[in-house]
Image (cartoon, rainbow, N blue to C red):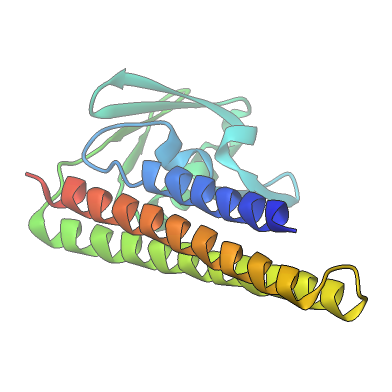
Length: 181
């Protein structure tokens, strides 16, 4: 019963870590733009499905679309994203210089990190709620006794508290990393 909760919570933490990896602004990283959605060939898909992304240096990304006709669509999608990037189209690729973070942008990125943190906390609460439903159903169906159900609920709360601490620590560390000059 608690295995499901643990798995759901691990997925939430993994997702949070992945989203935090995109907040490495000030340093070029292909992960920054790979999941930006673009419209091409009649569907909406991430950039990583239509182009290859590589590092030219620590501050510069190079995007090479497989079909040159969508270069401007990719550049526009990157410009419209929340990341304040300014892509430059070349003959067969798009170059992005990742600017250093200003104090104002650092504060905005911290706000984004806190929003992601809150989403992770909601996911953990949802996992706890789903697990409570499973425990209650098992108790109603007489699959577990009331004492066992209470023990499962106590263990579930310990798991949730432990994961909440990990999420809080991760967020605090990320916030310090973002604000570091």
